[in-house]
Image 1: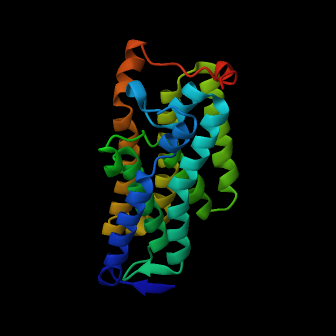
Image 2: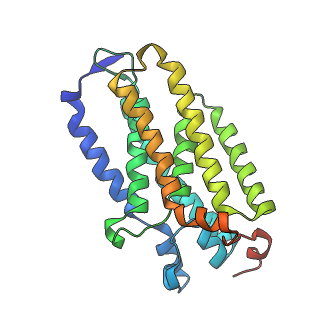
Image 3: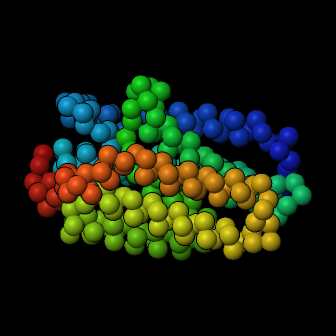
Length: 238
């Protein structure tokens, strides 16, 4: 492993943050809905996978979800590959552990608050779940199957309960806790290191962004007024 000091990599962090933010600003829901001759944002629609499913059907929703998931996960995977042979100077902390979630959180921020759309984007669920789908297998390759099984559970939950927003909150919170637990165990002897603390804080921010983006949904869920996602019916839409 090669040690790298903050003074040697800070400009890479700035570059990653800027590039990943603008990657996040690119909204597939808006692009796909334009091809469908209808702006998903019309009448206050949220430019995200869940609303694409409600508006255009399950097939389009899955396509949009896949695109956003790749958008959220691919930058993190690239960052992990570039920095996988480095550790922060004076520590045993892998730069690749830090950089994949550092990249991911800026993609998510760009998706939710895109400068290209007057800071009114989607809720970032597909991008966030995609981040974990790409990032967790960096721990163990077979984690990919666990994450996919988790996705199947969430989709089944949506199909049975019709509460898409609740599934989103459960999914992101569960995956965040799983990854945080891995890091706490791995870096138990260095848990007070600024790098570990910032890494755990980034995971907390990812979770917070999900709940913040769904704040209106949470109020509606409590009031029993939340929009339902009926998967069976959406299959019949064009």
